[in-house]
Length: 456
Image 1 (cartoon, rainbow, N blue to C red):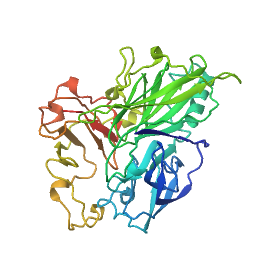
Image 2: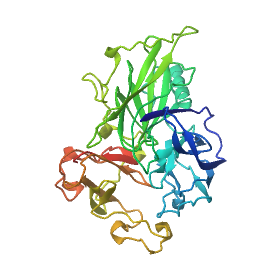
Image 3: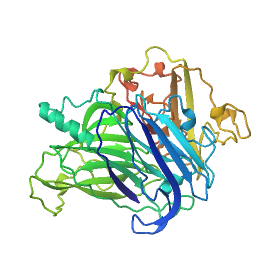
Image 4: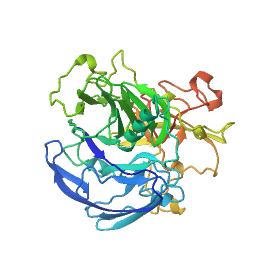
């Protein structure tokens, strides 16, 4: 089941850094977002959870009360947690899980961070049961935006900035008819956008907050200009079809330059490995001039950019993530040799177990961040690296893996440069040994979430 949750936030930009406080109560309830009632785990009775709406530089305090009969934590996906690694929300690594009836207060700062993020439970698979929500950090007014090449004049630049300020945030995720510990059954549903008075541009913040499937997104008859990825501005890329791996975030700008009317915003799962179920959902983007509008939605196949299985049509421009370079030149990779190269082989060994170099993770009794060697500590899943070192990491899917599907990779507390990616083998022991056409050392994408390609 694919569900599109829509969140709108209107807020002034450039406010002085402040303390933002939120209270979360995680509890059980029954809900039927797709028409099938089942038990869910909600935050403050909401699905998705409350929008955490912040300004760059804010200090944040979030009190979490666990009223479930199971343990949980909250991870703030993509936030670097500089100086506060113990607030990252990973059981066994940065904290003990919050017990039933217990509570925990997360405190961190958004200094030098901006963009679209999301939060979710990081205990078992409970975020699939609705413990997830959006987190938006509005950039400081002084921060440069990548809109200059889109604007024909000052008025249009002002319209682009207004569209960014009033962006609609959408959490896209699969939905199940059972608790995640039981079974994944998949169906599909989307919502509809709230009304917004635009000046010719529409901005969308998109999150793939699902658990299983990559997604494809397109808007009939319109191009999308990708201007941010994983919480950082990028050089603009014009696309018709946007590919989103699990956990990734994109911000896109759409020029409303077609005939006034209603247009389908399409979401489709993109099959990979054993995950071959094809699901499509739709929402409606409607715009009009003055007080005249229509409620009719007439589907015109000629205006759609992708097929029902998410494949881009021949005339559609598909996102090329390998060329999505950072807008800020300060986010270029360090020059010279790396201090160390690590090679990892990822493999699925049974129906619920994925391992790195044949070693499954074992949760320690005492969180690793506290530096104690406790019961459950596994030296073969812990790597010690010197501070301020530069590390090259080469990862691949094992040829002996039960499933050769792609696999999401998210690095907590850091972003990383994606120097290269693709299907097939990488027969080099160091990045510098690879041919120049396989590796981008000049302006590689700077991300916190990617996917290892299938058989790659």
